[in-house]
Image (cartoon, rainbow over all chains, first blue to last red; front, side, top):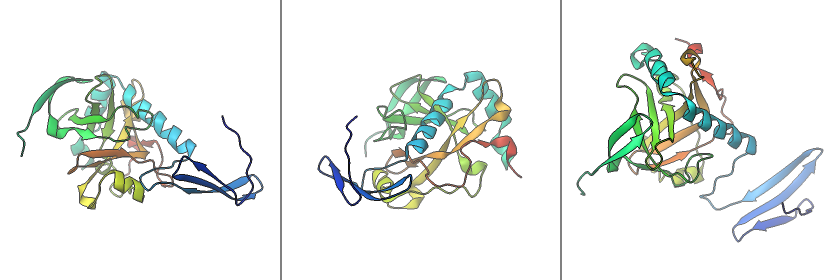
Length: 79
Length: 149
């Protein structure tokens, strides 16, 4: 991992079109400003990891459990 | 307009014939599955709210998904500008919303809807995107059996 030291107000460029600026530091919190292309999405790591785990779980159900759940939660039951 | 073409693919539910027009392209893949881009939606059963989001090129890759509005009438999804652009969204009516589903092994009664990473499909453009919800008030694992009538 590349490690750099920056002061509040200083910035980094990642490639030509991503700018990352350290805005301020308060205690244990660092406020970061990001200028990214408007088709680039940015997510907090914990959110990203949670969804990755959910996707993994959505893949895992056995054929048998899948059909059992489909029977248990019929569309008409919820109407 | 091009004639509808059929294609036979292998899926988690066995062999299925799909229309090539039904293939949804995910330019970013799904979270953790970034290199898989082409999916189709398959019914699990005719009367079930569950569907399989099946990868066209990988038979083992099929995620169980559901229409959240069958269970939660006021489920709300927030999209930013970048996400709308990826989805080529010009009208909100183009948008279909799906959420992934977790069925614990041998416990279908504990099935949960995963509300924090909805999968959005622009049904006109056939483009899809999974859009993590950063500040939604919904539980990430919403138990269907806790559903209030």
